[in-house]
Image 1 (spheres, rainbow, N blue to C red):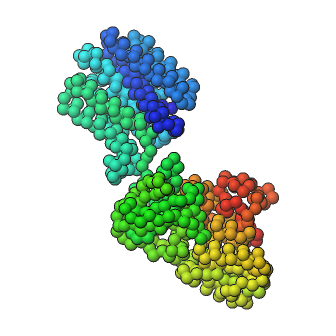
Image 2 (image 1 turned 30 degrees about the vertical axis):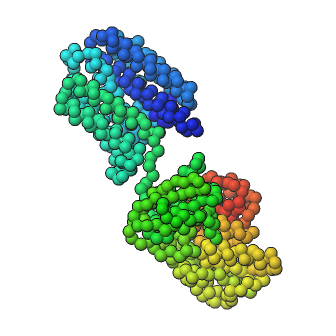
Image 3 (image 1 turned 60 degrees about the vertical axis):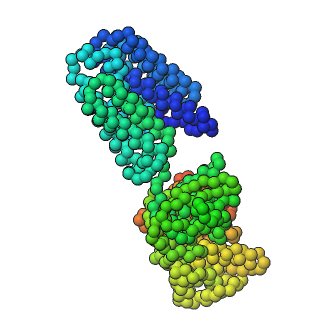
Length: 582
C-alpha cells in the first residue's frame, strides 16, 4: 500500500480532496505511532494516560489504513503488515524492546511507502525527513506525560536530540528545495508546489531556532506542531502538480492549457517581441483562438503543409499572459518575450521552424531559437539532392519540373538541382509535362501547393509519369498525403528504432502530432550524425499495411497497420524503393 502516492483522479473534486486528506491523516498518525514506539525504551514506567494515547494512535492508524483499502487500490500484503504492526505496538507497550522492533518495522514501512518509485538522493532525503519527523513526534508524545527528569539516563537527552532531529529536517527540506528544479525563481512563492516546499524547510528551521533559545519541553511541544505541519506538507507534495518551467525569452514555449475538461498542448514560437505563432495539434479540436490579454484575439487556422492549427499573435516585450480560448471558455498561459528581437522568420517557413524547435523541447533542451531550417541548405540535404538528381538522370525522363521558393535554402537547392542536372544532360523546366519528374525543393507551403496541383493534374491527364519527388525536409504528413504516392531521398529509415522513438515521443508530447525532419534533427542534437547514413529513395503512400523485409523484426512501438504508434506518415507508410545511392 502506498500512502504517499495520491491515487488517480476520481473525476470528483470533493472525492479527490477527501482521499488526499485520508492519506495525509494516515501518514501523520502512523508517524506519531512509530516514533513513540521507537523511543519508548528511553523512559521508565508509563502513566495510564500515555498508554491510552498510544492505543488511540494505533487504532487511528489501523482504522485509516483499513478505510483507505476501500477508498482506493492498495497492496493487500502491505495493508495486512500495516494493520498488524499498528495494533501490535500498543499491545507491546509493556515490553519496550519488542515494541521498538515493531515500531521500527512500521517506520520502515512508512519510509518505503513514502519513497516508492524514488531513487538516489530523493530516496535518501525522503528517508531522513520521515524518520526525523517520526522521532520528533515520538519525543513529543512521551514528553507530554513523562517529565524530562524521569527519562532514563541515556545519551538521548531531549535538548541535543531535538536539535539533531530539527537539523536533519532542515537539511532534508533544503536538499529537496534545491533539487526540485525551482531554484529561487518566482515559482517558489507564486505556486502551491513552491510554497509547500518552503513550508517543509522553513517550519522545522523555526522550531529549531525557538527551541535553541528556550529548551523547555513546552517550547519543544509547540515545535512539534510546526514539524507536524511540515510533515503534512512533505507528504502532500506528491498530490500537488509540479509547476512548469518558466518561459525563457527566445526559447519556444511548450505549455499545457486547460479548457473546460480538456487539457491540450500549446506551442508558442519563437517567443520574442512581435509576431509569434501559437500552434495547437489537430487533436485539440477546432474553433481555438489565442491572443494577449487586452489585445487582439486571433483565430487558429490551418496552414498549408502543416498539421494542426496556427494563430498569429503579437507579443509585447517582457512577461505577459497569453489567452487561449474556445467559445466562452478561456484560460491563460504565461509567456516571456524578453526585450531582444528574434530571428527574421518568413511567414511561409514559420510552421516548419516551430516544428524544429519542438523537437528540441521534446528532448528537454531549451535552446534559444536563432535560426530556422529554411535559412540554409545543409550539407546532408545537399548530398541527398545531388544523389536524387543523378538517380533520376538514370531513369531518363524528358525533363525535371522544378518547384522552388525564395528562401535561402530553396534558392540554394534549386541552383544545386540545376547544376547537377546540367552535368547529367537533363533539362530543367518549371512547366509540368507527361514524361517529366516533379522535384520540389520549396518550403512546406510551396511543397503542399505543388503536390496538390500535381495530384489534380494527374487526375486530368498523364503528368509527371516519372514520379513526384520531395526534398528531405518535406517529409511531412499533410504534404505527402496530398498525393497517392511520392518519393523522398533520406539518410535514415523512418521505420528504425531511433526514428520510431522520436515519433512516439513527439506524439506523446504534442497531442499525437506527426514527426518532422527538422524536429527529428533537433531532438537528436549532436547524435544526428549517428543516424545520418547513406541516401536511399523512400516512397510514401496511403496504404493499409506496413510492408517489411523478409524476416525483418518490427521496430519498437510499431505494428503493421495504419495506426501503429510512431508512424511518420499519418494513415500511410513509407518504405525504401531503391538501394543505397552511391
